[in-house]
Length: 119
Picture (tube, rainbow, N blue to C red):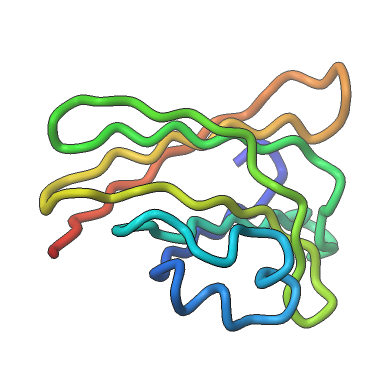
């Protein structure tokens, strides 16, 4: 995708907040139903991790409500990533749209994921 490899991860906020590099970046007591969405970004050719992009996620829930947030610059195990908490309050299909601006002034690149969430 535009010379980048985008990886997407999702775990409950409770699990994510146990990890060094994420525990201090997010609220200690997130809202009920909070999920930790994570993006890693690597250069396709070199495999080099990119830690200075701007990443925004837009989540559309099963009821078509949309929540959009810029991701925090976080890290795990010394490797840069981007993450934020979103509430997944009901079961069903969630559409995840990821907008990445690799560097200031660059044209954003987009990708999307679908999550089938069960409570």
